[in-house]
Length: 248
Ligand SMILES: NC(=O)c1ccc[n+]([C@@H]2O[C@H](COP(=O)([O-])OP(=O)(O)OC[C@H]3O[C@@H](n4cnc5c(N)ncnc54)[C@H](OP(=O)(O)O)[C@@H]3O)[C@@H](O)[C@H]2O)c1
Image (tube, rainbow, N blue to C red; front, side, top):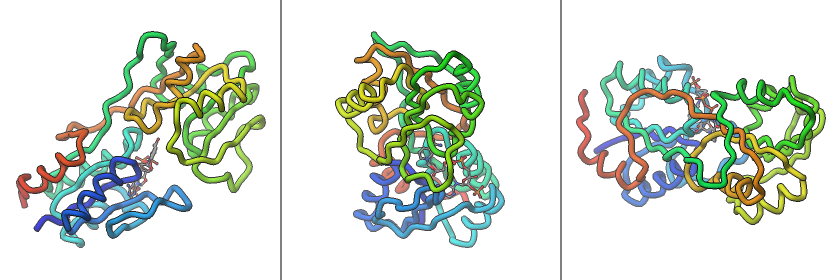
């Protein structure tokens, strides 16, 4: 019987968890522990870092894990690298459950930047109204550009003062709609959106709304990730579990 570990923190990992629970697979879900009230999960769940690739390898061995599914966010590059390294050392089968990156559509006005630091550098311009659609952990990168008014949408209400002086905070974990984001951005007077190329439908609404408003999007391109087998389809992971070589 396979005993897979699912590295989660995404909608797709949640969909996969439901499929595995239904199929009565002895799977464990792993969350980083970034949100205060994570959604209830249908699988046994562990929370918190493993202690790098070495710590992960130790965990995989101790728990007799047979397969690893990397269903983390495309910007969780460190976790993906650790998973690839630990699986290579233990010769465990690894698959990534990913989302295709968004592609610019007619009407989109995208400026590509390579990472969060690049976005902050590109914001070195006169004061404007920015929908900074990145997570709490990345806000500090924009501290050097305090002239802007920032709209922030966060999963949890901030517990500490924010590193940006002029902000409007909306606490919401979605799902979001293009109509809702259009109304939000109109009310805020958003002139530019800063977004990570997350891909998938869940976070697309702000991009659709920016297109409708004809405002630019500063699109943070995806980080480089390790080469590994990949699927966009959670059901495909079940088929893979049934057939992947254990290699141990
Ligand atoms: N980055 C984003 O934009 C984003 C957006 C939505 C959701 N998320 C989710 O939030 C989590 C953290 O993202 P991140 O960008 O901070 O990741 P990251 O930079 O790649 O990971 C940093 C460290 O956090 C721990 N970690 C990350 N994901 C974990 C998981 N699923 N289970 C256990 N430990 C985990 C690991 O600590 P150790 O080295 O100690 O093992 C990892 O080295 C991920 O699960 C990701 O799927 C991220």
